Image (cartoon, rainbow, N blue to C red):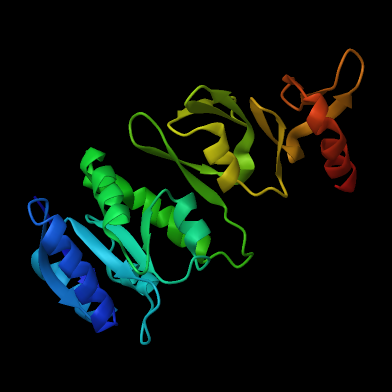
Length: 250
């Protein structure tokens, strides 16, 4: 059984989440404390050392992100809770962290808990949280790092280091500028939804490329591109016109 703490400044919200856990998941999750602020949450975490922290993002005195300022090692899983679909959600996804949209329902909570059960090492989220904090605190507003779910856990990679991505059935292979190939436990579509579309373009059902690494474009014997590392990739006929428009705008 996992232990948890719920941090939310809204009494109704934290009690509603507690009721769902107690009603449907009382054999899997034990609630140690409900906290109404980051300060109280930090005290509870230090006291109880929970497995999981349900963390509200929007709170009046200190927002949820401030919680991480109080810890050097994050030996607890974090599940963000928020009523705002857009607020920081992209940064959370980039770090492969979990979140629940309010009002929280049984099905979404069940899916999050299933993912937690499959996660073998609770300490592996430290790099994910650091990547998240790096992105959310970026002055440029652009996300610089992405947590890639691999067979062994997660690998952090700078977005600008990704040259192209290749579909591998239900997986995806990501090629970096270090000539490294990372097998990721996500589909190419999943990765495409995360990576910024002003930099990456889906040239084919099997390939997503970083436009910054394109060396040349050829239209003899079909459409294809050559990347700076020498890799040649086909451009699908149906995507060629849009690709050229994007390429010439750069």
